[in-house]
Image (tube, rainbow, N blue to C red; front, top):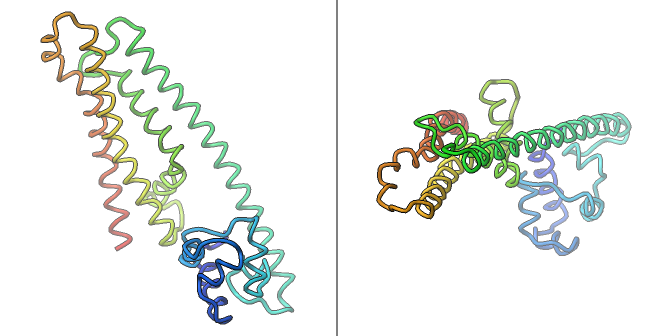
Amino acid sequence: MIEQEKSGKYIAEKRKQLGMTQKDLAERIGLTDKAVSKWERGKSMPDNAILDEVCEALNISFNEYLSGEDIAEEHYADKAEHNMKELMVENNKESKGRKLAVGVMIISVLFIIVGVYGMVLIPGGRIMGFVDIPSFTLLVGLVIILMIVSGYLGDFIQALQILFKKKEYTDLHLGKGISSLKLMIILNVFVGLFLTVSQCIFLLYGLNEKSGIAGMMPLLLLPLWYGLLLDLIWLPCYFRLLRRKN
């Protein structure tokens, strides 16, 4: 696996050896110094389209960038083969990740369809007592869709792997996992509140006697309740990862 932090430190080291500032390097490749700063801190990597320019500006080879260190000429062939294998493994993982994201997206859409069908098309399905399956499925579906769109679903899955000790991790992985759990917690409350307000609006629009909504408020609050209930699961996970970082 390519280590962003190691490669980032290598970029910073070579830049300083050449007497360049981050701004100098950025100007040579037509970017901002903020982009260079992110590379050197391991927050991101140069795009493939400009990677050759970065290597040329720093007088390093592509393999040295991937390795995050200078490579002696006698070891260059072995290191190049190793890096190629690592890239193939990483590309395979990315391909599997994309397939997983598509599968999760389809399942999420099905959840949303079931939720909408139960809340709108089935008479009385919007409020089915204390256990409101349509509201729950709609909440879960929308939250997962938003996680995918925001690009945090992979980090969230990785956070769970770290929690169950099924994956070795760096500080960068840990930070991304913490951010994804934080977003999940926020989205559960936000989407729950959104669904609660939406149901109140639809009910007010359909009721002849507006006062009837007061007696239904406990049931209308169920989506928000489900969001808070899910957060009771994710909050301990969030704090566990936070303790590991500290």
